Length: 318
Image: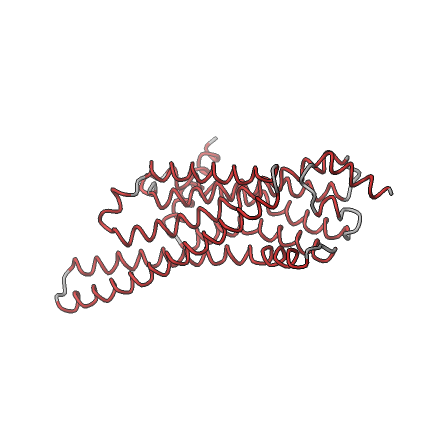
């Protein structure tokens, strides 16, 4: 009877946001909350810091202010925001093992769910935009700079942000409708990215063979420059494709658990605990992304080092 009254109270406060936080707060092992909350606290601040450094470094370096790098900046800002959401998530987990009032728990649950969903979709759409950008770059080549400009990229980012915000707001209307939208968008993003990188790979291989044949026929300096340019593009594209694949790997456990829950049409404590661990694992991706970008893109890594060096000199000077 008390359990039913407790659920009614939660319904009044949380509205449609019935979740593992309310349903399993008394049944899950406390260590599940402690481990995930501690892990989130440890990584949230470095996640915010490294993504902020990456964004500022690229934005302050005029030579790096290209449409492609603007998308990387958007990804960094998205990951930075995920780091902030991770703090809210940690607060939610800690509230589960304390005497925090139900209203606080529900507010934290609503915020973490809405923001996490919004920025997760932002990440998917940004990675998809990056793959399409690479495809346009290799397809149009010389016309790329006139077709793809920074203002157009910013408009596209604004549309993506509004779309993600609108979809996240569907949580207040219908969880089933929201889930349907997410499933469609996620599948579409994956298909578009897969097709884009497949076409890029085939086009690059074809161009590589053509340039090699031309260079062998007539050994020209221009031919060598084309080879180097294509090699740089190939390396950068391959790097982003690898980062995207790693991004998908971080989301795979969560997606798998959700599919299992939907198939079984019920939750249990084991699946609920696994879901919490998978969410924490997703948050870790926002810390890994900038590290991968730094390790694979020399010009961005150089800009970050330069910015940190100047900051350190200014600090020592004062």
